Image (cartoon, rainbow, N blue to C red):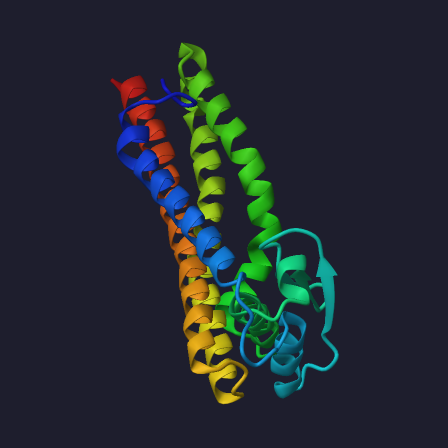
Length: 241
C-alpha cells in the first residue's frame, strides 16, 4: 500500500497534474510581475477600478480594504468586503486594474446570486472539514481492513474518499466562478473605458494566466480523488480474494 508514497497511480495521475499546476503558478506570477512593472495610460489604480465596477453595479456598500502580500486579493462574502493586495490597491498598472476588476466581479456575483458562486460559498466549510478528515479516515480504513477480524471496515476508507470528493466538487464549481468573474471584469473595463487598448491586452493576459491556475487546481483534485478511489478499491478487492 503506497498511500503516502509514490506508486503508479501517483506517477500516472497526480504527478503530471502537479507539474501542470507548477507551470501555471509560475506563469501567472511572471505575467503579473510583467504587467505590474508598467504604468497604465489611464492612471487608474486598482482601488479606483474596483470602486468603479462596484458602484456601477449598485454595490456602494461593499468596502475595499488593503491587505499585505502579492496575489492575496479576494472578496469576502461573509463580510461583503473586497480586499486588495499591496501590489494592486494603489498601483496604476494593467495587472492591478485587471485583478481588482476581477475581484469586484465576485462581489457582483454575490449580489446577483450567481449559482456557482453560491454553491462554492455554501460548501466551503464542509470542504474544509472534509479535506482534514478524509486522509485519516482512508488510512484508518485501509489499515483496519487489512486485519482479518476488521476486514469489513473498508467502508471507513470509502467515507474518507467521499469526503475528499468535496475538494473536487469545490474546484469544479470554482472554475465557472472564476471564468465568469474575469468575463465580468473585462466587460466592465471595456464598457467603462477604464484602460486603453494597449493596457487592456495586458490585463487580459494576467486574467487568462490566473484562470489556468484554477484549471490546474481542478486537474490536481480530480487526479488525487481518482488515485485515492483506485487505492481503496484495490485494497477492497484484494481483501475479498
